Amino acid sequence: MNRIIPISSPDPLKLNRLLQLCSANLPVGGFSFSQGLEYAVEKQWINNAASTQSWIELNLSVAIAQTDLAIIKRLYAALIENDTQQFSYWNEYILASRESYELHMADLAMGKALVRLLSLLDNLDLAEVEALLVIKELSFVSVFAIAAYAFKLDLISAQSGFCWTYIDNQVAAATKLVPLGQTQAQNLLYELSAKVDAVVIQANQVADDDISASLPHLAMASAWHEDQYTRLFRS
Image (tube, rainbow, N blue to C red; front, side):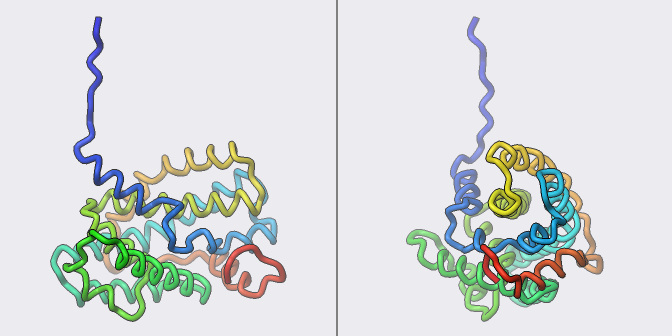
């Protein structure tokens, strides 16, 4: 008896665009920053797979959901409505939310690198967003939203992809720093990615006045990493 295999792939191109945007090979420098993780390992706040998962999961549910993803939603609305003023407002808001110089610098450096990359993609039509790409200081969050919009991705895909880039970067950093084995790293990716759906739902329920987050350990780890005696990651 022949079995009928259901096929559900409405737009393979959009899936490939999402994979490209979230790829570790995207040359934006994400893997050169540890986002405070290196100092946390130095101080033994993180010393195994379980504490690594706890650190990343907390950052996802508090910092990423309450700020980055919630603001991506508003950036998308501004892009759809061609509202440059609102886009600029939320871009400035996310930059002001960074609690250390290092986090702020990483956001700007990665944003600048992604702007440069988008401008060099031969067949990508950027006419709709051209005025935004010349803003002097663009957060990586903002440029990620622009890229996803230009790639014709829906909001949920963009937010989910942003979560993946964060998880992937952090697990890769932890693999070197803790250190973790490759199988442990893959288990972490599997477990943490299962949290993304709930994190995105949470983010999309955040009201404008509730967009904020404070993680003192993350802020301190990032600030103290700036003059850590030895380090593998940029500061």
